[in-house]
Amino acid sequence: MKRYLNHYINGEWVASTGSETQPVINPATEEQIGEISLGTKEDLEKAVQAARDAFPHFSAMSQEDRVKMLEDIAAEYENRKNEIIETITDELGSPLEVSENVHFMMGYNHFSQAAESLKNFSFYEELEGHTRVKETMGISGLITPWNFPTNQTSTKIASAFAAGSPVILKPAEQTPFAAFILTEIFDKVGVPKGAFNLVNGSGKVIGDGISSHEDIDFVSFTGSGATGEKIMKNAAENITNVALELGGKSPLVVLDDADVKEAARAALTHITNNTGQVCSAATRTLIPSSMKEEFEAAIKEVLPEFKVGDPRNGNHMGPLISEDQWNTVQPYMEKGKEEGATLLVGGPGKPEGLETGFYAKPTVFTDVDNQMVIAQEEIFGPVMCVITYDSLDEAIAISNDTDYGLAGYVYGKDEEKLRKAATGIRAGRIKVNDTPADFAAPFGGYKQSGIGREWGDYGIEEYLEVKTILGYPGK
Ligand code: NAP
Ligand code: MG
Image (cartoon, rainbow, N blue to C red; front, side):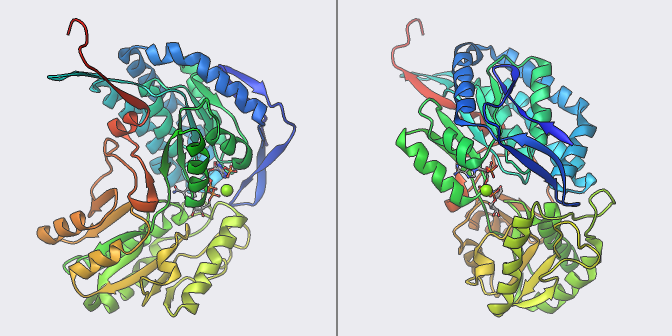
């Protein structure tokens, strides 16, 4: 049992001023694996003060020293590799392989990328009539969700550090332990005291406290739209800057010249990766009407490759994060049937033999109309909607008929069609076929998927203000 009852404030581990604790559950076993303190507004106040005190010297740290600090963090993060993998598997229920290749690697890549982006980043630019200076915005409050315990924390922290912004992090209660490891890493490499503060607690107390705090200059949030809306309303009272990375209902457009089996595999990968708990997952697969029968057969054929079960036992898909999440996802599986979609594979209930743990079945609905609830709402579980189209224009129109715009995926061969789909889908990130990830590429959403861009140099910009100086002396 991990009893992690301290917060990290001003370079020290300090006891919570509150006495409330929160159990942390392993979603694969349903057993308690530890507990954390639920911080209070008083704890948050101390952290804000520490960050404010750190601001003058941390924001003045040289670009070179900040690059070095980020490189040291990346190196120490690598030293803690096994522990990070084990911790994420226990708190999130993600298969060991996913914890390593996705979760561990994403955190590592964000710190390394921030160091690289910072090396070439220009904070000062002389133009004809004026000089532009980019300066640290101030101190930042970071609120992160449970689905990627090292990805969202790392991209925010790495960008903030690159920009010289002291931070207060409130990670999700369900998966808090990865953030303790990150904190130990920052402590070990000598991140200046007060530049990083960890306050655990509930969204209602600490999250709300961060977003309504008049001394916090920037709030970066990843999570649900409903919470994003509350944060934006709170922040509006003080005209605090916000960045929101919210949900999605991203399309995967399969062209008529695509390899059907590869496309079916790609579709199932999207809904099973991290048990479908991925904001940028494709959850609507658009296929040409003429491909329908072939595609359905291909889904059934490749489904056995996606084994569900114990994340420590070589399976591809672990459980959902919690009983609450399981209870949120299940009604959608019923809803799809009520709405008249055809349940091709999966459906409600737990997979056979997996009664303990919050396991769900990879579920694919066909004959889905894009107006159905299952095609419009973010389910955040292993559920795919298959929608047919008759022309590429129609596919693009269906893709865009959503409140969201986080990502889009295109599969096929014809370059002109690939380009047309890639430019036609209104979303912040489009991926064509199986192109590898690029951590320098900006990440963020159009429409209700959010505000702002993270990752790489765009991520750093979020933590900066632009100052223009007219008549800079000695220019
Ligand atoms: P959430 O409520 O938006 O939680 C995300 C973070 O915000 C957590 O740290 C949470 O704290 C905090 N929070 C909650 N209420 C807050 C408030 N009033 N003010 C400030 N911060 C607050 O998301 P969730 O409950 O974990 O998941 C609900 C749904 O959100 C999911 O089913 C999914 O659809 C969506 N989601 C999307 C993403 C994404 O990457 N886009 C990630 C996670 C979830 P706690 O520790 O109290 O939870
Ligand atoms: Mg919540």
